[in-house]
Amino acid sequence: MFEKSDEQLITKALQGNKQAWLSLLKRYEKPIYNYGMRMTGKNEDALDLMQEVFI
Image 1 (tube, rainbow, N blue to C red):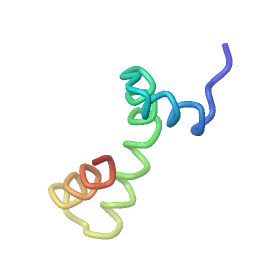
Image 2: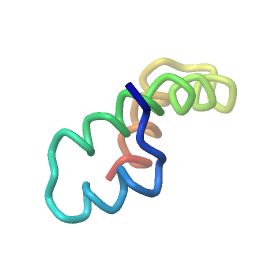
Image 3: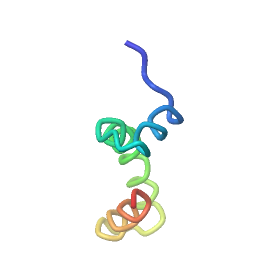
Image 4: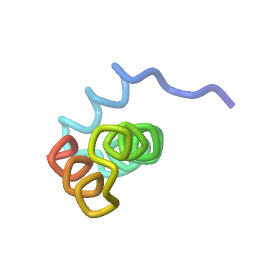
């Protein structure tokens, strides 16, 4: 099974495809959270930053 590209997932997510959105979220939540932790050093702040990125 082939993974869809980010561009394909974004296009589908913008068309209202919930599964595509969840795939993007799953793909990027860990790296974004880890980046937030490196920037802030605080779990709560990293989670807030992650939320802002996905909004």
